[in-house]
Amino acid sequence: MFNQAIVRIGVRYGVICGIASFALVLLTYFIGYNPLNESGRLSFFALPVFIFLGMKYYKQFLDTELSFFKGLRVGLAISFYTALVAAMLLFIFLYFFGHELVKEYLAEMQRILEATREESIQLYGQEIYEQSLKELGSMSLSRLASFDFMARLVVGSLISVVAAVFFRK
Image (tube, rainbow, N blue to C red; front, side, top):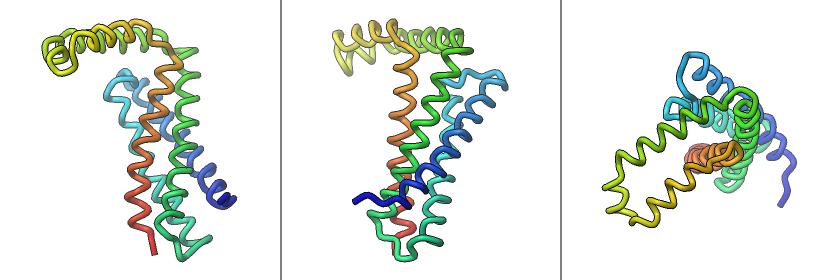
């Protein structure tokens, strides 16, 4: 069932969290690190904060008898809008300023893949290893942004489950 309050909370806290996450990406970039690498995962720290704040607000002012599933819906709404805003801003940033960042990231990923060649072939097989190398060579900005979207959505979903358990009645 459609609940406008959940959507409003999701949009409010999700958009603010997406902007905060992107600000952390920019901070990582201006410090001198590549935000597409592991150092860019710093931007995920805003997600649990805003999910918990959004659920707290929803429980405090809109529904004091917050059930697990309603809390989960609030958390998933916040996660979705966070992932959407952060991925769009990341795509825009990479499109205008990040071509060199993408080249560095792809070169580093290719080095890592070649360094772990034996283990990868042993675990996954030769075909999958070759396919991974081929796909890495044809990586686009939209694919990087969609990977970021999916990563934030998965992490946000896991945090939403924990927060829904925490805030249930």
